[in-house]
Amino acid sequence: SEEQFTRLKNICQRYSKQIIDASVSSRNMPRRNEIKVTALSIVDYKQRGLERLNERIDLPLDDSTMKEESVNSTPSEEEQSRVNIVISEWNDVQAYLPKVNAPGSRIGSYRQVSRGFTCVAFIDSSLPKHLRDVLSEFRGAVDEEFPGRYGWLDDTSLHCTLRSLDSLDTDAKG
Image (cartoon, rainbow, N blue to C red; front, side):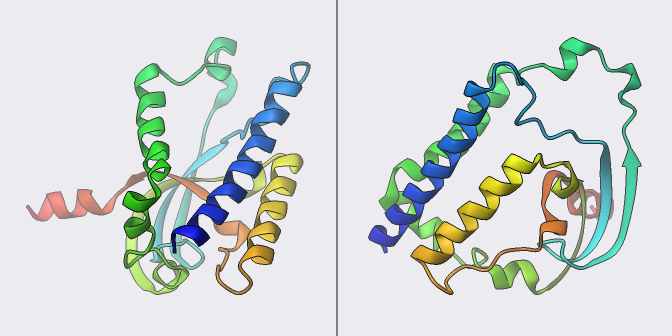
C-alpha cells in the first residue's frame, strides 16, 4: 500500500541521512564512507542474488598505479545525473508503487534457480565497520516495522553489478 511504502521510504531516508552525516562530519577522515574495491569478479551464478554460484573468477585490481586525484575523484555530472534520475523515481509514490509490486521484486526471484553471467564487485569484506553497523541497524528497523515481510540476502553476496554479461552471449548468437 502507499502507506506502507511511505513508512519504508522514511526508514530508508533516515538511514541514508546517517551515512551522509557520517561523511560530512568526518572531514578529518575523508575516506570514512569509502568502499575500496580490490577486485572485480566474473560470476556464473545459480541465483540472481548471487548467494549460490557455479563459478567465481576474481580479477585483482592493481592500485599501485592509481594517482591520488583519481582515488579521491568525484563521479562526473553525467554519472551523478543518471543516479539521481533513478533515485528520484521513488519521489512519486503512486507512480513508483507498481514497480515495487511488480513480479521480480520479491526475495524469491533473487533466490530461485536462474543461471546467468555478470561482472560485479563484491563489497562485503570492503564495508567499513560503521557502514556495516548502519546496514545492520537498517535491516533491524525494517524488520521491526514490517515483521516477516522482507528477506535479506546473505552478506557474502553483497555486490555492485558493473555489467550483465548475459547480453554478450545473446549478441554472439545474434
